[in-house]
Each structure stands twice: as structure tokens, then as C-alpha cells.
Image (cartoon, rainbow, N blue to C red):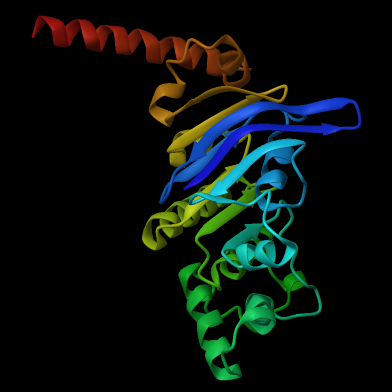
Length: 264
């Protein structure tokens, strides 16, 4: 479990995060949503130590990450996997070599063991047969799957994903969502995903944190999103007329359903 307590972050005199307290639950897909510039990326960077909070705590199973020594933070990061908005693959390395890279850096395994482990992860993301290709030779969706394989190769306890569906078509985005959800539950990982993709929110979001102008505005499950009475959340989610109409239909059908249940 990752617990954030009273987190503030300022850059000079500009406050970007204000008194955020929340919990990211074990074995679940935890989504951080919000408009561009809302502070969700800054929040994730504070979670993984790329930024230092102005004040507050980030607790990993009770361990205070903010106040760890440099050596302790290095050890802590070995429990984390990261997927960046761009796949961030090494162009000069093959798919297999990209996945092996964290093992080459941190694992005591011999070469054959590292190769076997990397192939296991490629099989997990359905990329067996692509291991000898280079990033420029595969699609954007395949590159994201390579990034997922690389992120899980060290068996992390925590998986961080920054806009994993960025630049992908809806069908490929669904594939990535299903992979992330499956990995989260199969491996009992605490997964945190930054996204503004409402398909992801409704499809795989189990614990959703909505950030608005640096404040935690709302938190709940995907089943609660459509019925939320928080105006800022509904303005964010139902930005288009089509989605507004969809929400009205859902609410009307829900009211009819509740009415029917009371009279059965």
C-alpha cells in the first residue's frame, strides 16, 4: 500500500500540490485523473522520488520514502517498475535486450537466466517472436508492450504508468489496459496510472483519484464516477455533449431501475 499524507509541492512561490492525502491500494489499478496542468504528473514524480515534496509524507507499506537516505531510496526503487509516456526504449538495443536491461543492471543472474526471464516477460505481453527486432521495426503499441515487459522484469511491488495509452488508437489502448489490469491482479502489484482516457477509467479503474488545480477533489471507484455529484469531476468527465447525454441516460435508467426494484 502507498499512502500519501498532507503532501505539498511548490516551485519557488507557485504551489502545484496542496495538502494531498490519499491511499493507493495493493493489487489494484489506481488511476490518477485530471486536466492537463492539474498536478497529476507532479504527484507521480513525488511518489517515485523524481521530485522532492515541499512537505508531507509518501509511505510505502509504512516506510517513509521522503526521508530515506540516498542508499535506501536506491534500494526502494528496485521495487518499482515504470512505464513512461513514450515507451523510452533504447533504439540501439533489440526488443530482448531492452527487456533485459534492468536485469543487466541489477540482477545477479547469469546471461542465460537473464535471457530466460526476459523471454518470460515478453511472453506475458504476447511478443514472443519479436525479440530480435529493434524498436524502429515495431509499432507504437508493440513498443508500449515492450516497455511493460521491461517494467515487470524485476518483479516489482509497485508499477507506475504515465499516460500509457498516449498516441495509441482505441483498439490498441484497450489491449494495453487489459495487459496492465491482468498483470496487476496476477502479480498482486500496486499499480498507479496517470491518464485522461475515460475508457481506461471506466474499463480498469478500481481506485480513482481526481486532481483539480493541485487539490484532491474526489476519490472513489469507477462504478461511482458516472453518478458523482461533484461538479468539477462531472465537468471534467462529461466535457462533450455526447458524454453529457450519455450521463443523462445512465442516470435516468438508474432511477428507473431503482424505482422498479422498490416496487418488485
